Length: 153
Image (cartoon, rainbow, N blue to C red; front, side):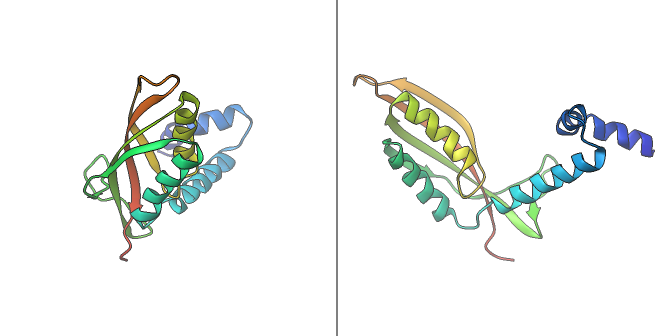
């Protein structure tokens, strides 16, 4: 059984990549635990903080926000439809539709920024870019999924 479990662990992409770089199983598993712990800390409890970040980050890149439309917050569920919890606290997902316009470079930088630097975990579910009549100005529609922790314990 241990050998079977070990082979399953070896098949995890991150572990197999680490092994190919010379890491031991212990180092690989420790690295995965550290990444998970860091990810847990990147999930905010207040949606206002993340929504404000979306706006502020866009302005810094000279993007004009046309609209930000959050939908209703929903429980975050795993593949078996069970609630996802972090340290016993329920997690939620907040779908947001964002429309903006600006240069191609700024839109690309914005997409990278919100995935890497936002105060909460944000996934870009859909991105549509279109050309406007203005020279070198594009429109972008983003469907985002923001992960939040419950503020109640």
